[in-house]
Amino acid sequence: KALRIDHVGIAVPDLDAAIIFYENVFGMRCVHRETNDEQGVREAMLAVGEGGDRLQLLAPLRPDSAIAKFLDRSGPGVQQLAYTVANIDETSATLRSHGLRLLYDQPKRGTADSRINFVHPKDAGGVLVELVEPAR
Ligand code: MC0
Image (cartoon, rainbow, N blue to C red):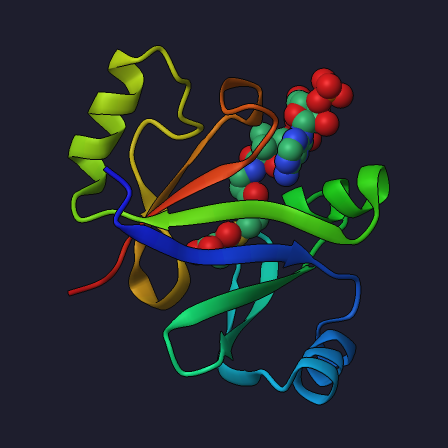
């Protein structure tokens, strides 16, 4: 089951400009930055307040990446909604038993060495749902 919202992911064309915007306008704090070559993204994690809520900014690393394709089609905006799960293998099995397609056969590496997978947006009401099992 989903334990909490892990983060909301927003596709942006310019990571540095977006960080400055969210810090200055909404008072968020950039707490982590990382390049994920496999996912084709440069990302930043922003803390919203002190309660653990997080916004993830995603900028494309390559023109053929998922984020570049999203920006081409839809422009900047909410690209994904991520839930924290305790055990991604169990959660994936449950979702598959409900007939949902997961994008990867096995979890891949996400932010800060988490294990991640995605539910196809067509199987989740038009929302790209990410599952995140944090690193121990
Ligand atoms: C595409 N669609 C979406 C969508 N992307 N709907 C909602 N939210 C999105 N983000 C819709 C399209 O409009 C289309 O609808 C349909 O899905 C299928 O589109 P497609 O052309 O077949 O597929 P693609 O090529 O656009 O790919 C979509 C897909 C891809 C979700 C498979 O983006 C993907 O593999 N995403 C997973 C990886 C990812 O997003 N990585 C970047 C974040 P119509 O109605 O037109 O047919 S990396 C990350 O998040 C890591 C760092 C982390 O958090 O740890």
